[in-house]
Image 1 (spheres, rainbow, N blue to C red):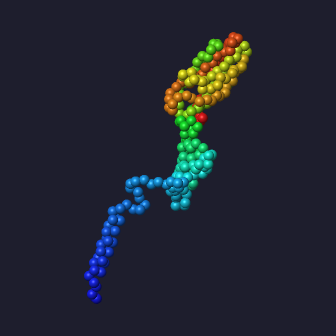
Image 2: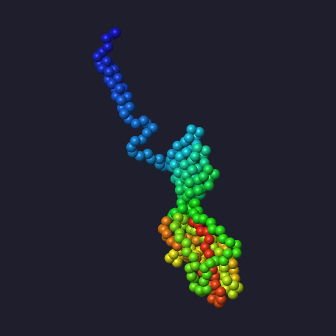
Image 3: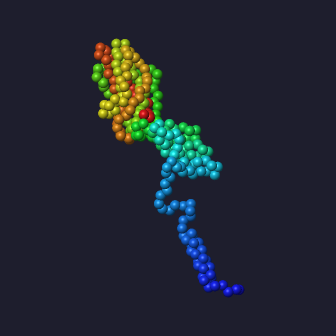
Length: 245
């Protein structure tokens, strides 16, 4: 072997040691596709994608169409299934107020918050149905010219509005009146509904429910006869369910 200057051998040994040091540090550090501390920021209109092997964006976060009506960009999130159908979103298709929405595979919103009031659910509508006889008469009646409460029903507020069905009857052709739906504090939920002389019908009314989310109240069906009536008026509450605003 030819004579090699000592300083060159030292340099080779230093390079080998440096290489060993690098390999050692690499084995101790997290892989470059992992973050074990700190933050990751995607700004300035950027977007974050997590895609399936077929290229479907399973998770999309960031700048999203359409923009807001004032021209500013909308920032949102969409989580999709592998078949590219949306599963969850924080987004508005018209660029307006965003809502958190869960979607079924056919693109129908099945669970969402109320975007208009910002309180409670928009979907699903919670409630149930009630069967009643086609010739059934309300059991509770009044002949007072002032509103009297004839029926009460407990209610827990999950949605900002409700729709209530009712059956109403004036006892005879000389009697007309009005009905309304209020909460337990007397705050009107529905507008006053006019009932003509001798009328006997069923229908529905809708309106907002006052109070905090999940607050408890009683719904009150109230009725009164109009001055000059000689009979009575009765109302029976039927199905009631929460609705969006």
